[in-house]
Length: 137
Image 1 (tube, rainbow, N blue to C red):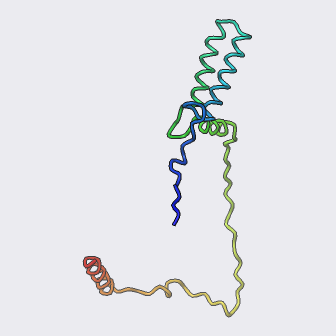
Image 2 (image 1 turned 90 degrees about the vertical axis):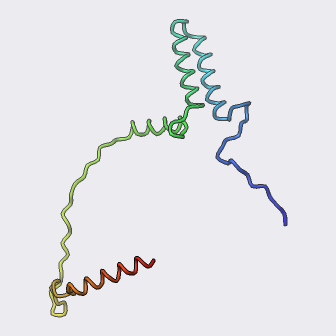
């Protein structure tokens, strides 16, 4: 019989670029490109705070997790929650009335007569037998 190796840790992404996965490398690369582009066009007093913000956002997208959820997933859920309308209107509708055809065949039996009556002694016997059976098990 041939033996096959079963892959393990299938939920962990492969490290492709050194210690980074493909997603992490892309997030950091896009952040680095934005920082380089900002350096070309902005003065130093505007560039450095903006570079810190861009670098922080890129690092958060690459490494940060909230409740074991990656930050891009949390961010996507936050954006969809923010942009989606949240006005829920409930309008009560009256219950539909079913018309019963009155015919001699359909007799209305009062509910009180259909319920069997249990005497107190039968109820006591039933409770006693249930107590005995539950103690044996």
